[in-house]
Image (cartoon, rainbow, N blue to C red):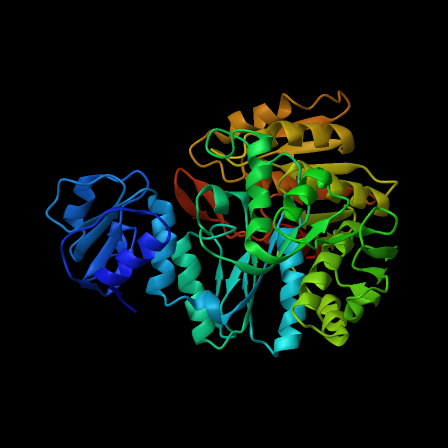
Length: 495
């Protein structure tokens, strides 16, 4: 892997990014945007809160890509947008790995990870274990333990994105399922990338704040960008803003695949048959996507997961999956940190889920209540610092609607005070019958919530799932994960 001056110029020019180029003929053996990662003969992309003095600690940088020329004696390619340039150059440096992959992508406020894992599991059957996955939880580039790692972003920076695609291709992967966030388009992480299939699951207010989207309209606009960059598109007809999303999709596509539960407007439909605590069953109506017609057992609870399953079935049908692949995939799919339940003798049932916005929390709480109508509901929840500020009011609202007791705690507070965040959530709890506890030690909060639960009660532990860290003051502090905390409580209870 290398980049030459000619390749750099051609790549940047093709995307109308090049402002000025140096009079030099060089070959670069490495590309990066972090001075701590540079090697010999590195082309360095200047982005973010960069200071010139960082280069003094970066021996090996022999060329720069930058929006503003820097006062250093190095060849510099000046560009109009450095984030786009990073994506374009990363593609070239890793030799366009996307060209050797079938790629399907999901976007939506909730359900992206669930749908992605479903499609991944189905395609693993179709391709005989030659499918990669880039999700909020894991990035899987092959079949060896070293090919699986925890994700730090829903959609990684473009450099890591194409680097991992190259690893997947080199490992023999032929297909890739990935999540695409609104931030991926806002930050140009997927600039220039085209997908075989793009699926729009749903939309509700989220990721709105000073460091994210300025408004819901901006959030929606960036979500819909996936539909501009996919050969075939799938849209949930039961989603909010469906008319706007469909109209946007039709500006680039003569045919849009729409889906929903029966009688909710989609061209492809399913009917829920049974939804129990550990599984659900549903039937997909006959259609021109004949392979997906039939009855399925879904290895996940909740009728809201059946909608995600239909989107996954449609995507994989378009990828050529057979009915047997679909049945086997949905019957065995497991999503880390999603809808995990543990009965605690004498203290009801604890649910652990990654739910982290109003829509996902509401769906989770509604389902839990339907399964345990006679019990009280306790919720352990926090909100992340320095992002998604709108979630704090949303959590107050959903707790007011469904909870009897809430334990407000820390959840990736970053540079903010977790108590201040908790009080902000509490300020939006309008139901006077909800009992509010403040406990910033997350493990203690979970333990207390379970301890006070009675035999028929429900304890919802929301937000972190199986995440192995808490983000505090810019550091990923080790954390055993919510599920492990609940498991420890169960073990202690049974001792």
